[in-house]
Length: 291
Image 1: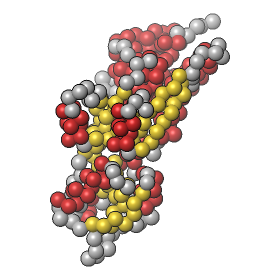
Image 2: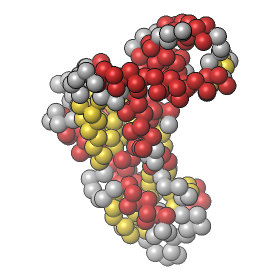
Image 3: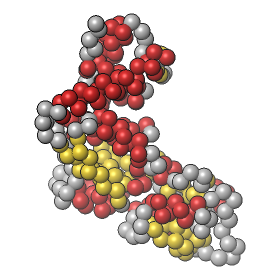
């Protein structure tokens, strides 16, 4: 009977999820060559190639696709077996900006649970400023938030160790509206915005003011879901990151001659040191980067 190496199976699952040996190595806290060796040994043990490799890409082979669900079940059974011995559950308190979470939040939560079923995730959604404030007061273990470059510079310049962030990725903000939406002729541009304080709201208003475009609040929401409903309903235009946009809305910036918006710099702050929780946090971060 063939006995599988759980570390090799775990490496295989991470490579499959991230489509990269290098990113899987980062997540596992090891080297790309070590992950590659584990996967090669697993392939040799199974007698089948699990990935199709090219210089620029990695993707599951037919055998790898067939093995993936079973591999996840095996790792899950292992975690449940450990849990049955009374191992104490750990808790990770993480804050996630609504502008960053996007529409695939359910998939993110599922990936975290698959990674470690014994880890209790306490997830807080909100504005970046509010989440960073909670992090600074040590009410959250980690936060993933949106910053403008000057906000990062100000935090670094604080000079007392305040900067412990890692830049995850950069993505643009865009002007979004329902297909076919047009602003009313001769009237101020109607906006759907989050209630203040909100960095995206401030960036949108600043861009319009600098372009001498007259605007007015048409809808003020307490969350991204409310803003999405307003623009889908054709009430107004809004500035959002694409990942936060509801299905069906379109970029109308160029069509309406609206000013360019600044990029969103997505940053993670973390004081998590426990290995299991840190691995889960990295899983979340990598899912956002490549989601």
